[in-house]
Image (cartoon, rainbow, N blue to C red):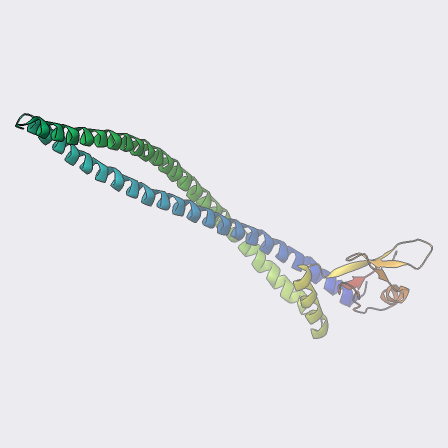
Length: 243
């Protein structure tokens, strides 16, 4: 391998380390982002449940007031039974009293159902509150992991970037531009080995994409320090002398 290809290989080794660090940090950033969304969703769910509970409580309170009013009406009607003068008046008041009592009975059943539902909603909210606390704790853990990763990688990344700048300085502008373009496409995997597929025939493939290569490319790499790319994947080719 000539000086240019060797410089490219060294640059690739550094680049892959940088890409790996950035990939690890990015993975933790994605975890924080996903967990932030989960925590927010849990908070929104409990917020909606609390709003629903408030409406249910208002319905219970309104029904309690109505029950109180109707029970007062029943008490008055019972008093009226003792003051009516005729059977007709007595029957009318009794009919009204029975109607009120039936309505109170219906309302009491409804109130009991609402109170049961209310208690169920309170239990659900308690569970949701616990879920919110758990999601928030997970979020803080992910944030701590991200902070630790960024801190632990910072010095190493700085050193690698300095090494990368030094290695890049050994290449001409055209080769470096090609390297950067391919690196961006393949996340640092810029170079691909030329592999001989048969020991007795001049048949070669690019190890990056497994597509066949002309024998002239392999021969050129064996005899010249030249930057040659794969027509299919665009990676920079190299060949071991023993190939």
